[in-house]
Length: 272
Ligand SMILES: [Zn+2]
Image 1 (tube, rainbow, N blue to C red):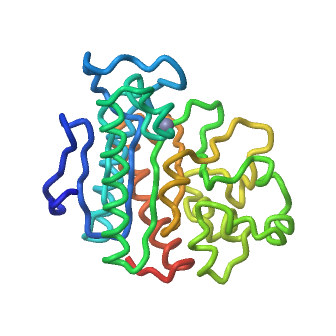
Image 2: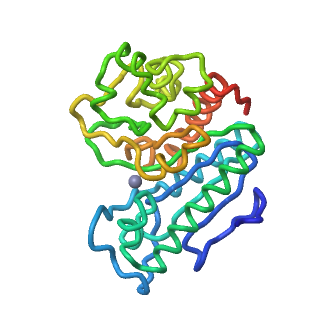
Image 3: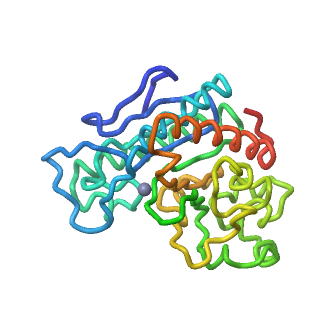
């Protein structure tokens, strides 16, 4: 448990995990940007090991943008181990592959996220969780993952509304509170993708409502685990114009803050 303040970070064992507490009901995690490669943890032998380049820097830019925009800060949790050593966005067997040191870092990372979500709900009455990633897909667009398959999102708006698919997504808490139907919540003008436009192209959004047959990340372990009591999403970001420079990351942060503030106000009644 971290007893820090908004200006003092907490670190897990051997500084593998960093938790910067905040005072906004917003929680941001960064699982795949780490660079630490201690010899005491063997390299993982299965699963994906690629680093999401500059996503720790992106997470810090998002935190700074919230501070500039709202005068308050989101909670930020960072895994500093390289993905060759642990994958914080997988269940523990694939994540740590039996290594006790990697498993401890994985456990501390998720405990910090759970602590942050508890604090977010205590300050806001509700909250929003974002898991930040970087993708290398050909299309330069954000992939917003709500734990819904491409096949589901490729359905019509009527299909989404009739099946009330948002209740089975990472936005289920928002789906229970909003006046919007599933299609509107997931890809309408006031969806996260709709609110990020035109600054940041995103799928799903009004301009780009479904992945079609393109590669698309649906949202992983963390998005599933940490959206039980608050709503959330996985954001997979492209590199050019988002992660490639200080100014790109700042612009992404500013656009994200504007979008998140409007989203949580519209669908959760949360004023930040
Ligand atoms: Zn990732």
